[in-house]
Structure formats: structure tokens, C-alpha cells
Image (cartoon, rainbow, N blue to C red; front, top):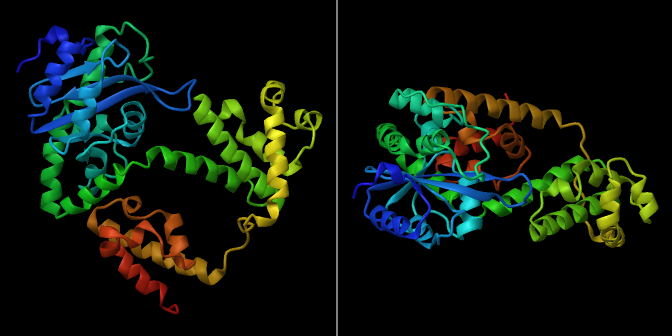
Length: 373
């Protein structure tokens, strides 16, 4: 099948269905998305770029078309779906189409395992591997605006067009380094389906960290407000900060107001928020305060045990040297916080699972049992 160059912007059902049928038989399919997340909690899908060895197109999800064929293609075990830095793509596709790729290859993950460094960008990889300089002129395009001009469409097409070349190059390097299984393991973790939940959990944790020095009641209120904000933001499809800013949650958890007047006097709490959601906020505060006796607070930040700190530093030095020798970004194996947690006795860590345990985890566990040198 050949795609008419004048039809690279697909906004009718017949062309889309033909393309998806053809793509099912391709050896690989490259995918990218453009989305906006300015006034919403969930990302709004504005464009889907799909490429095969024969063609590259932009699909308009805002047109009067059904995307079930795209969903079926993405969810199928074959062909492999190639992305770059796929986490945000996973979120928007999961929310909009209700699917995740059946077989995934992420060129950013593969590049990190192949010697290109941590979180290397798509344009940099295209430059180094394909010797092509991509334009940066349309990085701030409003992708939900219609019509898009020819230059914007070409820019979007380029985001998928070179993924196949990157895939072929990187899969060879992974094989040469004996890291194909490592990459496959990480790809599977990326497409496990918890992207949206992980984002919500991270937002709640940010609030809890900001209130970690509070007493039990204060932490209980902060946690309850964080959960309330997540539920309301999802239900209304509004950005979290539109409902209640992080600084406002901190002030409310610290002061625990009992009336709308007290709430409105707090720093960072806007009068519009009090008018629209003040009563709901007070109810959350009252309930969390009354239930605080059953809340398990985070430990207040304190001075780290010198022995644990020294052990963590020794572990980190070992891991850094090991990764340098292996031409592998340290962050691809573990973050500094993971090492601190390991030194403190935690064991439910990614570092102690899969290829990371084999590469470094077992040795770091051995170091953790030593009494020191």
C-alpha cells in the first residue's frame, strides 16, 4: 500500500480504516501523540502520529471518526509498537482509547541501556543515529487548534518518522551488549497499566512530604485533602491546582479551620475556592481530624543515623563505579533515594528485582550486611 502524500493528515474514516488494516501487517509501527493538558486533569488527545516502513501519517482524533481501529492496532501483540519516552503517551492513550500497547519498544529506555546516557531526547538520537537535524520551531504549538498548517503537520510527522530507524539501530546495540532482556523487562513495566494511578499517587506523596513535619492531626488532614482533591479533579476533569493549590493544602492542614471565615483568611486560599468548595473542604478537615487517632503519620524529618548514611554512601560509590564500567546511567539502575532506603533496611525496591538485582542488587545487599571497613 502507498499513501498519497496529500493525505498524510487523516481525518476521514475510510482512509483511517485502510491504514490500520495495512499497519496490522507491518513489521513494526511507530507511534507518537500530541496532547494538551492546560484546563483538564486528563490529557486531551490532539493528534496521533503513526508510521510503518512504507508511510507516516497524522491522525486527527478531533475529527468525526472512530478510533477503534487505532485501539485494536495498539493493543495487538504484533506488530511491535515503537515510542520514545512513552510514559505520557501511555497515559493519554489509556485514558482516550482504553488500551495500552500489546508489545512496546521505548527508544529512550533502549538508548540508556545502549550507551547514549540518561533520558536522551528524540531529536538528539535522530541527530546521532540518522544524521538528521530536526526542527524545534513548533514545540509550543497548540495541537488542538484547527486547521494545523503544513509546517506543523510536517513537524508532527517527523516525531514518528525516524522511530523505525532508531529501533533498528538500538535493537542491534542491545543484542551486542546482551541487554535485550533488560530492555524487554523495562518495556513491560512501562506498559503495565498503572500510569494514571502512579501519577495520582505521586501527587498525594508530594503533599504528604510537604506536611511531614506536622503532628498526627495535621498529616491526617493533609492526606484527606490530597485524596479529596484527586477524586474531585478526576470527576470534574480539572487541573489539581484549580481545585486547591498545594500551598493552600499545607496551610489548611496546619491551621485546621472550623468555619468559612477562618478558611478564607488563610494564605493561599482564594475566595473563589471558598465560595465554590469551602463547605466540602471543611467537611474533609472535620472528618480527618476526628479520624486522626487511626492515622499512621510519616516520621518527622530528622538527623540520619551516621552509620546508615555512611553505608548509603559506600553503596552509592560502588553502584556509580559499576555503572561507569558498564557504560550505563546510574539512574537506570537506581536513584540515590533507593540506595538510602536499601541502607535503612527496606527490601521492596525495584533495585532488588529483575535484571537490576542481578546487575547490582545482590552485591549491594552483600555490602549492606557488612559491618563496615
